[in-house]
Length: 119
Image (cartoon, rainbow, N blue to C red; front, side):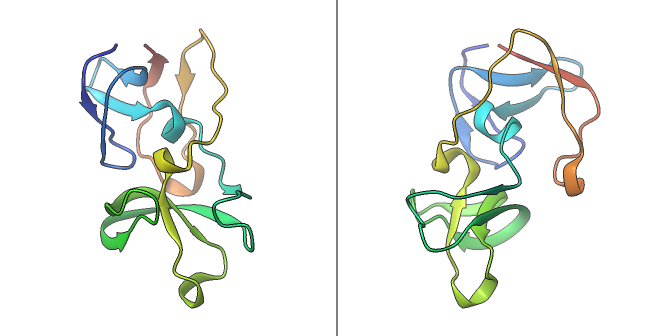
């Protein structure tokens, strides 16, 4: 699908390609659906970042300056660093596939058990 949508992972808007469940109208940015649990990145080179789910939280994304309310990366050393970034803002290269993706419930971050497809 290519219409505008709200990502149910990071709770930010999106448009274009996304993972979508037509049974329950669940949408994810491609980057949110395929985000690794831990990454090293040049935008925060001194520490690794870990993927967490912060629903209703009020931390600020260091890239877009928006509130991180859902899936986001945070510095692995915790409050001493306070670096946060949306999973979509990090722009992790995603693996694409024409096959449907069943989302793994890694660390209970995404609660969705239906197959979704890249559209």
